[in-house]
Length: 243
Image 1 (tube, rainbow, N blue to C red):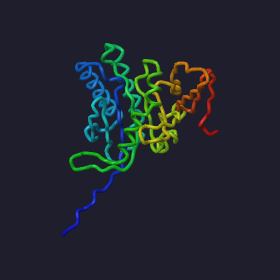
Image 2: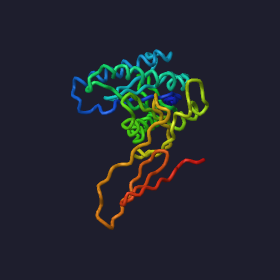
Image 3: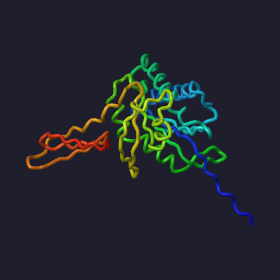
């Protein structure tokens, strides 16, 4: 009996995009903002010289995941694509009603995945991509940014090392901020970027109500460092960066 061939993994670049605060808008606005995102993303791919139809795409409900064609340079998913996506969303928001304005979180990763003949993509890199997309630093930075900023981007350490750190044309390493996050079971270093800002805003420490006298409260917020807030209001900041 002939043994079945094991599927071969393929190295692919991966992008996921999710609409900020999509819940609670109602069916009609939700359909509209999904359409806006798909249109803006497709235009950004075309303007970046990437064949949209050669990509594998998955509907995430309020977002889209894209598996790039084999052999695509990862830098093309970063520049000019992310900047073009942010610009298209900014142009839409200038004239859109509040219920149909769109801001997004985006994540970039790459790794070996399995691609079925049907086009279904599976593998550990997709799990990492999902954790990046939901990471608290990206959510907090977008929420704290001016409304004109339409996109927050989180890159995996692997993606950053093979693209940003080399200083390729159009990519300024100084606009990326290293963060550490834990999302579900995944803890990792990543790199945060907000197109249009020189540096992403630091996540704000959560506001707490006063505790009874004699108690002690410690809050932590990860960004460039870890912030500790005690009950009497004194803040101690421990920087996680190395010189």
